[in-house]
Length: 216
Image (cartoon, rainbow, N blue to C red):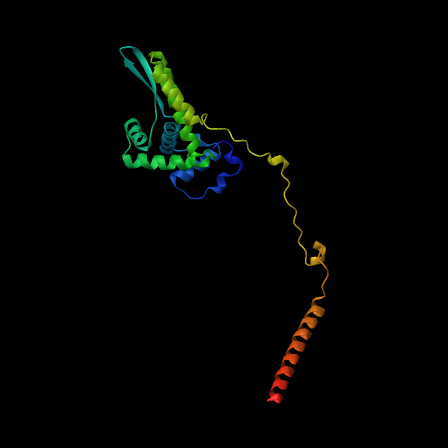
């Protein structure tokens, strides 16, 4: 939400829900003046946002020492984490995640596919390093290959055209065809001429029909 205050002012946020009150305080840089309950709510949102975005580095003690693995969190895992760490109900935890997405994720122009790709690359790099530490170079090479696929390094690079040299066509809006190079035509005169020709054709046709009747 960095820079959001340039476009949205505290007074633009209407309503008196907890979300509205926290949003107004955030935009006004007065979060420290929020009631304790709403400050705790915002803290839960921050933690949920952190887990949804980055996951968590989990350290595990094994016979070979301490191993650090990146743990990615989905929504159900974040709900479980919030319930365990803050002692809230599952319903409240789901409400927290809903507000988290509104408060943090939905206000940033970050395509979801890029977010998923970056997480996959991070996990792949950590897994490759783990394979190297264990001396399993075959597995490390396999992971390296898959990470390159995710990065798109196996795809052929296609050069986009240089749009800086693009010249858009020019359009002329006019009420007269002569501006476009066409010969001037007097519409009234042309209409009279065409009607005259049609009238002459009609009269000639009537005369022929009359002659045929007379012959009979």
